[in-house]
Image (cartoon, rainbow, N blue to C red):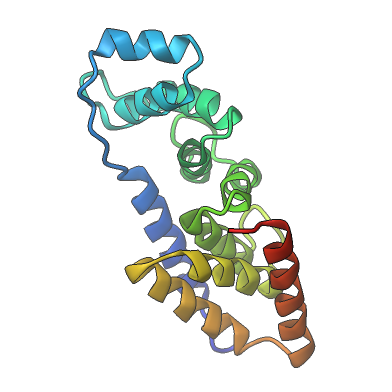
Length: 189
């Protein structure tokens, strides 16, 4: 792939991981009430508690504890938790570094239509991190991301999709287009 360098995808991976790890939320709830909600199974509270532990907000910073709460929330389908859990596995924070497990959680968020997760998964396919290197898949996921992102995220996904597409054969581009049409049929907006 002459026009693309691995560092371009690594930069996207780092940027996506950084964006997801720097989630900013307001935590005005009393810590004990939040913990009770999380322990009772509230996915949003579990996610917030995970962010608190991940950032050391009103609790000691503890990546393993953050992962525990992200996982509970992610298993209930919380997209943000799935993406952060994937990032934690990708970086080896609070868990042993595991690219395949990272890709598994990022894919769950991407399949729910999350634009950041779709870009992250596109980058993973671009470098073969946790998934086989596959430029058709990379182009597909960046294209999906571009179709639902906005602002700088849109521009970044579009630019990367277009760079990847330049490396594809006409048959591979048709495959991406076919996959995209199929996705749109099964994932209406």
